Image 1 (cartoon, rainbow, N blue to C red):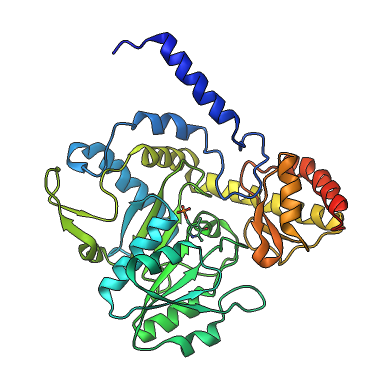
Image 2: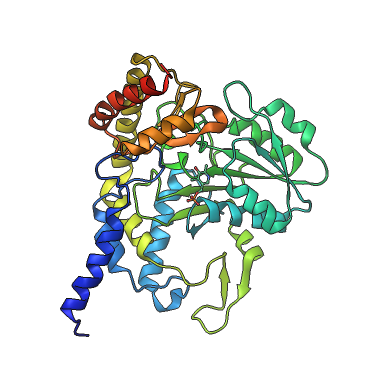
Length: 380
Ligand SMILES: *Cc1c(COP(=O)(O)O)cnc(C)c1O
């Protein structure tokens, strides 16, 4: 097709105008997001697969093969057994929805036990599937209180959720203990590792949190967070591949007889991007990124304390909660100065997620601004 160059340039001018109003990762001023600018190799890979629909894999067997390789690479991080399978999803929300959809099909009941820090997607899940959420309090270190879980289990309980890298503070629930309880009680255990899935495996001396624990039924992880790839992609792993039968339907008019999962048409773009990033980085590349983010987190922690502020809890992952009396005020003034931090007013703090674009240089630029703002509004 021959394009009208003038029209193209006019349309792109419009696009530029919109984009220029956005905050960007490239200048490092987004400090409160779990996303980042994808690894440079992701862009070309994404575009190459712009026209591939993996909802209809019979037409795109090569792309399907690439998807399976990506799932295999990722599954090794979580010690998936031979019986397991993985399903591409659009992210943590869809991963959680799909896991609980399966759990509900496998086990009778409508009560689900969740730690109070679960991601808000569980409210959608409760609404979609008519589930009663049973929130469990957190201990003083902000993880689920194991001792009170058993009290909440009854014949109506079908699932428990453990978070490996909470959205708020990046803490990890005691998954081993959850695994034991769920195994004993014959309850489905879903691990939400949307953020932590690409961090925890690369930390030294981390506790087991994945399929190495026999009670873990499913685990989901996001590629568009610490997977350093493009939006939207996550993978949901299931201990038993036969569980997919629970959520598959007969599909007409496409190249396969049955389709499992929530989405129909879905792009191979994010899968190609993630495949490219994983092949380029390898496990070692990810480890280096995580080490760097953790080092910058410790650096930021010191700098924050040096201006008279304190953190809510020693960071486990690359997330910091900075205690403030009036977080909304600080957020508002920082935003006016071009800096975006996360709002955690419910914990009386702001969230800084030390993603790969948040370098020491960015922290050095940010700290004087934070100090100035905090002095201005009377926090320090
Ligand atoms: C980000 C996040 C989600 C939601 O993932 P999306 O990709 O935004 O759908 C779910 N759980 C946790 C723990 C998260 O951090």
